[in-house]
Image 1: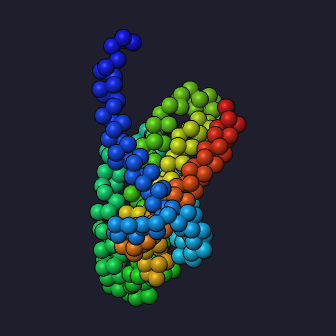
Image 2: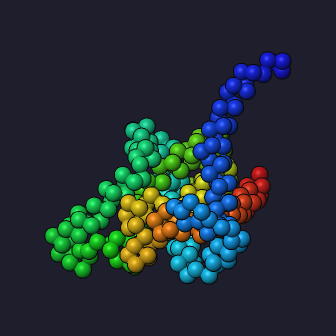
Image 3: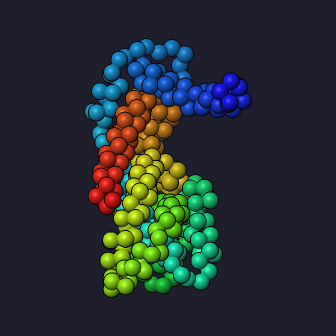
Length: 289
């Protein structure tokens, strides 16, 4: 096997070339353009050093987008994991038609978030107001996506509905690794369901909880499709996420190099947050072992 390595190289090299061409190289070019004044269209540009990075820290729109994104990501991560774990425990119990229920709960993960967003957009703007109007609740007969104080609620609802499916599958995989003997022993000792959860279930699925928390936070910090389909950053930029701000100003606003610097900084932020999450959650895993 050591002498004849050509088949392995033939399998690996094309994948490496494709990955470098369509991922690594564009990333490196984005980092390079962040040190220039290129607007994304002109044929010439000049190096400006760290000017774009300095300006990012002075931009109030960036601060507002960061604030909304962090609030959205933290709240949605907590809600998604709470619902996912609860549903997974129910699906892991001895109930009828649990395989059917598993397929139903996994269905949202198959659908595109853009399609889901457009459907919910129509629901929030047309069906829901008409329904409240017909039942006499005229004070609730409005499009929540058109109100600054309510638009984020619609985005959270859509995101939770779509993202919960994937986390349920991971939690189900973790719950099925728990030996049934532990629950039998706890029942003999007279432990209730609440004590079983905190002393058996939750400690045993700690690695899966870590994975779900890190992946969910990373995904929600990059919220983009939901914003495009539901609010496009409005109303009055109340739901402008960092990813959508980078896209709109970078590709449509002629601030390509400036938003490239913003993207580099945001990449660093996401990496730092992910590392901190891993460190904290892995320490919790060690306490349970």
